[in-house]
View 1 (cartoon, rainbow, N blue to C red):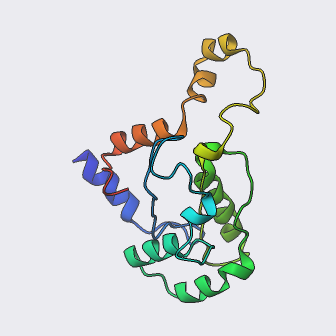
View 2 (cartoon, rainbow, N blue to C red):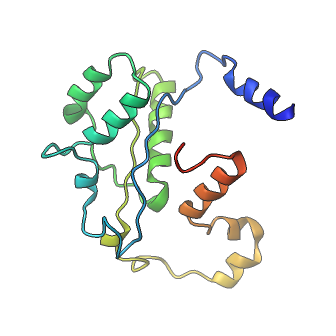
Length: 169
């Protein structure tokens, strides 16, 4: 019964300023350096045919949950959306993109936004730019140690906790 009550809380209308995700899409995951996408650049991963601006991932999200005026958003995406923001967020680039879009919507800059993150670990120098860290001190502190859990493992932990399957993702 507690689970049903928790789900009902999520389904109830919130504050008028509440930001809502209406569609989410995830590209396939493969192994870095040797997976199916090891030679595929981020712009190609987001492209559809010869168009490089994220249309395929947008279309997949749109087909899951049609959004009013999505066609207008797609038509203006080339002009108004920067393809690569360049935050050093590694595996949480999509989360950072969502935070940026949600903040802009709350600030009233626009009503509808699209957040997307992409990384390409196969084409990245794994750790070559990492600062020197005293790992003994990091691992001695539980909160600091928890910050070192990779986002891929974090997403799997969250999915397991809330019973979200790979298919649902």
